[in-house]
Amino acid sequence: MRLTSRGRYAVSAMVDLARHGAGEPVCVAVVARRQGISPAYLERLFRQLRQQGLLRSTRGARGGYRLGRGVAGITVSDVLNAVGESLDATACGSLDACGDDERCGTHGLWAGLTRHVEDYLGAITLAELDARSAAAPTTLESA
Picture (spheres, rainbow, N blue to C red):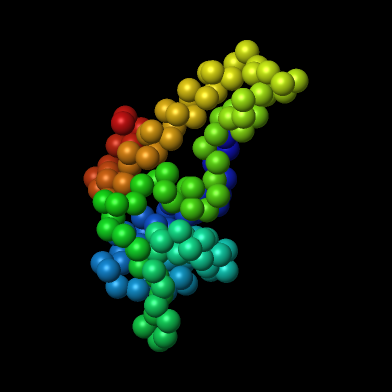
């Protein structure tokens, strides 16, 4: 399991839309500028998020992106999965056999960690993340 910039950027951009969108379309360039992300890269991420139903797009002069569901209905795990981030900590990708047709001695450890991470990120919605980050930047560390 390795969280890449793709996953970090996607979560940051979704929280930005949750905070600043208010149901209105927001231009990719505006989100990119606020988050320090290349607009072209963010556009690719937004395309993936739209394909998974997490974003909606509107064309035209007043176009842009807005959340596809309410902020309480989108979890961090949803966002990471939509952009192809793997939360799996096992070396074998959670297959039945790590190598040589059997599981390694630490497979259960890493599979358990994967379940905890999935449960944790699946329980945090954009609404909660936005509220926590607005209240105190260190709130997530104590959760």
